[in-house]
Image 1 (cartoon, rainbow, N blue to C red):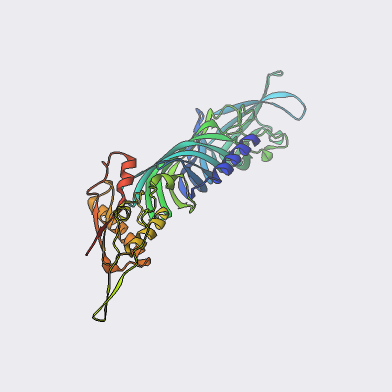
Image 2: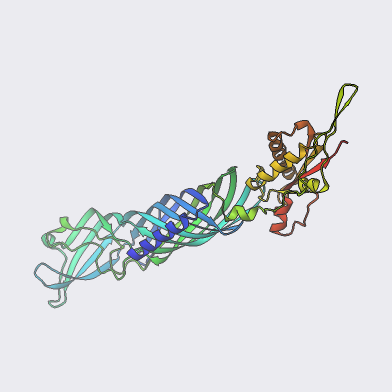
Length: 438
């Protein structure tokens, strides 16, 4: 068990160092032990948990998630009437005998806490500009605390059989044999570490640029039993000091009652994901960075001042063809929900502003575009927001607003067919058309 704990913690440490999103989780549903028993019936109770996790993205859709979770789990188990549990015991005189326990209305209310370390492969996709979906699958290592058991029975019949003497004793209360009514007792039962299969899925809602809400369902199912192997105890302990000293062992510690004890948790979950600010593989892949050299013709013509009739006539310098081409190269936004200026475009926009200021008679026609994902009306709005972001940035660099015309064409006029992920990234863009008024 120590090796599993150390290995799991090492995995958390390793992935958290590469984490690109930190996530807080809250879940609730039915959670406990799925019993298989021919002698009784187990029922799952309420369970709920919290957790914190990290996600490392391989690309635009796939990521690996780990973290740590804590959960409350509960059960009831009712033993069928007229069931006899028999174990071999040694009495206080050193003689071997069969200890026979018969119950009526026997019931256990059980609960325990657990800590889990998940390793989940997650896929994410887009539905629209603000919503998406996710599906995750993988495994968890579950570390349960001791099971707290409140046992009760309407009647307990405790008897012994000594095979060497062919003697049965069923009415000797001072030595722990006889009947007791309305019996109650509490006990703690140890549980084993278990490996779980985990599946989750649901919807993603973008609340802010770096904040997302995840809602959905989850299923955790145990691949290994929580019960210790080969239990040898009876349902209740033999007490040579009298019936009033009889204590519970619990069905999980008793021999022959539970055939399998797999962990099962099913419910709904809510997560808040905070994307970290550092540059990561996801951001790098979502936005294609086009390297464009600064125009070679950077010589600025000095305005020539000619005196005529005591008036100054200033001749504006003109833009070269390569400068215009540089300014009109598409500004790729890449991300489906990106409306703010990508960081890698700021230097290029500064250069565009400097060139535009060379000829202040020129106009800039700024148009925003999207890919074909989402509705036409939403894409029109996204395209307009992208164009306005570019115009607002150029205005901070000294370009007068009345020199700029802003519009959106949404998903119309794609540069590339919207059939691949890469093509869609390139179509999420803003274009600038330089129009000279001279």
